Length: 148
Image (cartoon, rainbow, N blue to C red; front, side, top):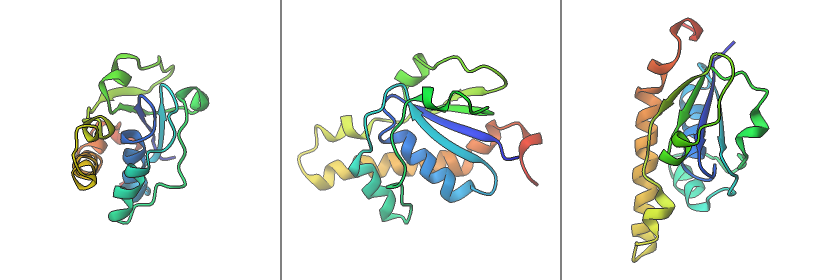
């Protein structure tokens, strides 16, 4: 059994979706990734676009609220924004909760003067999330759950 990891954000439209996509792409043989939000805001098209630039297609993922996953026995919950960390629902059982906050690309993009500048915010956060998933995520999992 692979450990079940939930990436939690406010609207499950951008950061948590990118994190789930990276986890599926980089660690599918080690974990079972999910994403959800405190609310469901729909998929952010720029998040889908910048992930696809690096060969990770998240277009088949969908925005959902965390209540939809109430029956999943998570081993780890990663909050990827401050609002989700502050409003994280109580997870019964053994789920460990860690916070790995990332800037909000849609919010940053509001001040951009060009589409390329706006996409630059998405790309930076995408790359930061990849670094976390690739180099830090596994250290938060109970080692006995990982396959050697």
